[in-house]
Image 1 (tube, rainbow, N blue to C red):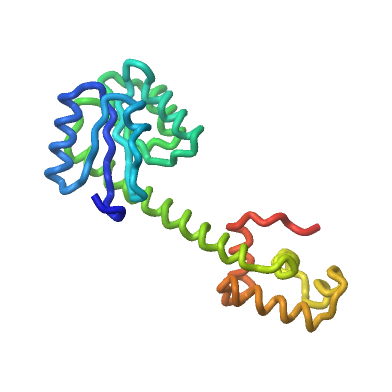
Image 2 (cartoon, rainbow, N blue to C red; image 1 turned 45 degrees about the vertical axis):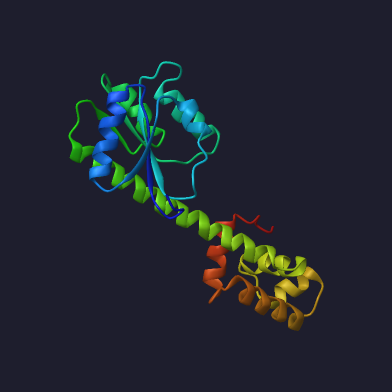
Length: 207
């Protein structure tokens, strides 16, 4: 499996269910790996690629809902599709409120599972692209000098060059030069774009 391939992870204590789902996914052209319990899944070094988790609700040592909570607490943002033989509305609501993509009750149609998996993988791809974009912005921001960061922080609040110069105790020409460097290093084509970048970086607002 290469780093660019998507993978569907299955956690279910029933070997027949695991084999059945893996057979379906192989037929659909999807790579998968199966585990009998959450602990085995956590021990797996997962490649940096789009993925999702097909998770049984009722597991011996830790319920699927408890495992979902654990993953969230540990910052593992993998989309989850729950499967269960005996679900109920409160359980479904709880899972979906915590971010589950789908909650399927056995026996479900093959098409239902495949559709849910495709949706989950797409959600993960979008999330990964967003995280990658933020990481790139942070790298650009890190390349700014301390003064350039100060100028950026003031400029994105709507301050004019003259006002920024007054706040920093420097000349308007110097501020203009710093502002140009900020725009170049951040790859910002306009002030509006720079403001959006600052929002994504969650920069502290200047008072």
